[in-house]
Image (cartoon, rainbow, N blue to C red; front, top):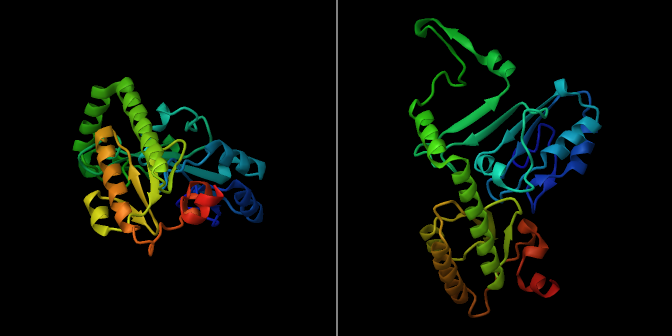
Length: 279
């Protein structure tokens, strides 16, 4: 629910971008006469937060919502295909009362064209499907068509890498993300890494040319790096060395100081002058 915040405007913890179920429960009890549609995030875009699916379901059931009065969609764009190989990650399964799951094929899998995979229950597919007379077939797609090359690329990659191949790539991504976090922390730079994610958040660089050169995605005072399988330790070292060197120039005269990002990533992760002393 990190992005959608549910139909009823549920609050969530800003520093983690994940469902805040105490507030969620209040909103549910205030709207018990209505059905509910929930978007559970399996890795938010900016901070990589993963909602606790089991806690969301437990909260819904505890508030008296039967399974026929709720719909849960699990948005696993990037992290959905990494999650099965991560210890302590929530288990997304149709044995639980979820309605659908989606993942991107062009992110972790690396399909050369943007694409997504939607998995849902047969009842929902039948509700959307219709017979196409001139094609002599039944169409179950949302848009009425699809790119025929995408399934071939996905099939090829899944078969070439296999379970072990994906497992190794996920472990490499997480290992490198933790390496990046430790190096930045050691350098005194505000940084945060969600436990289950390879998306790393840190204070926004002051130089827009640096941002463009490294193709950083920025939002307010923060930027993020998504550590993917193609990212090596050598690449990370080059990025880190350049960031530390540039940062020494940005703040050398004392007239400018590192931004406080406690609101965005939490006080424990902020290395501004105020929180550095307190931590």
